[in-house]
Length: 253
Image (cartoon, rainbow, N blue to C red; front, side):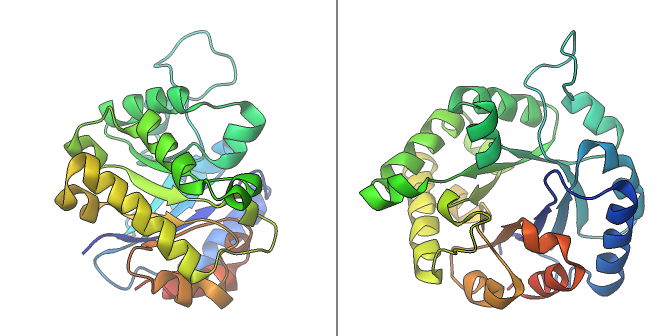
């Protein structure tokens, strides 16, 4: 069975002390209950070492960086390399979040380079894709997401692709309180899996975890995660509330 993943994205929130307290509460109350369950915390760069120490020895629990550089090393002030992340024991990296695409102009081509350097160094990317409201209203969301997949992923081998977690983010549902219905989420997740199957075959496509990211909360997690092609969630605001995220972890199928 595919990995079922509850991934918290703290974004640019919390002080170190607040982050420590939040982790303490969540880790005390919730642990992956099945072998195929994983819990991932994507925390700000300054908190990676603290968070990695806190989850030490906890099976099925991992820390992720929220981004990484496409360069190995060098004169790139302010950037963080995959090698730096590895030295902290970090295994996951979120790539291509809609906010990185929108505010920092990250292109599909750049994300392909970031995917390459992560996979070359045994880091597992959580690759984000998804459409804005105007694209959804125009009815062209399938073509848009298919293009994102093609330009960032399709140069990879099937073996490499199986190391990638995909997160579908309907951008119109991020931080807006709006959520794609469970039927809308399933429709796009199934479409993404069909696209991967056409490129790599059904065996590869069926092995890849596809997460939903867009105002996931305790109240809708069970219904969203029950969909056959939804393998968990990439959770923003609700992951900053211990009781909410604990309930979301418990909703994994």
